[in-house]
Image (cartoon, rainbow, N blue to C red; front, side, top):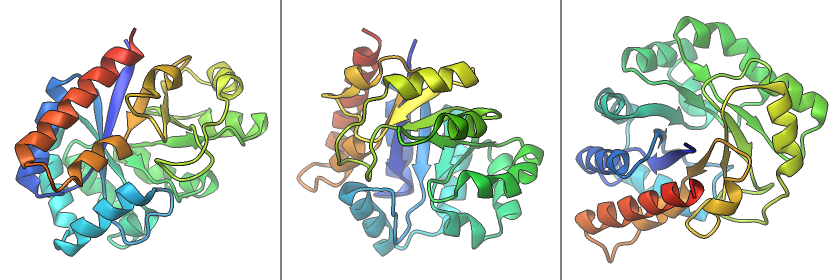
Length: 246
């Protein structure tokens, strides 16, 4: 069965709400969670996630919220920390890795850390039992794909767009999917621009999908109560899980 990974912004609107949302997502069939670390300049993310980042920071987000939330979240679902390198570097990468490991986190997703730089931190990740999620894109050469996915762990993140999340034009993926599959048995998940309308098509040939902006857009809808937000996101997650497995 193909997997569904959900991205949500950590602590938005608050930790109790986030935990309720995580439990609902799990109940709806979500297989893994990306806890997004609010950052002031999320260069790989579109306006929806950028706005959620800003609102979380305005509410006073601190990394301790991520740590506390993860202690409970990891009891419910496989959890990854998704953020920009500065958030990890500022607290000391080795220290952050140790904290993540102690709380049961599966790994890190750092979109602005080039593959070549991830190699510097590979020993730290391995010693902490964490996966550093690898990114591939349709613009990558065969040689680069083979290098990036050779020792990939957790899953491989296939970027379906050449732009930011939640926008742009989808790139043809058949070729790169084939190239990745010939080089690695690690599950391949497609992200960027995946929603109820695109999920079925995007899921062809891959092992799962990653949904972010579609969920976060609901979180930002101030016309909805917290209960309604959770219900709407749960319904969306359930529908997407069914669509990718038809």
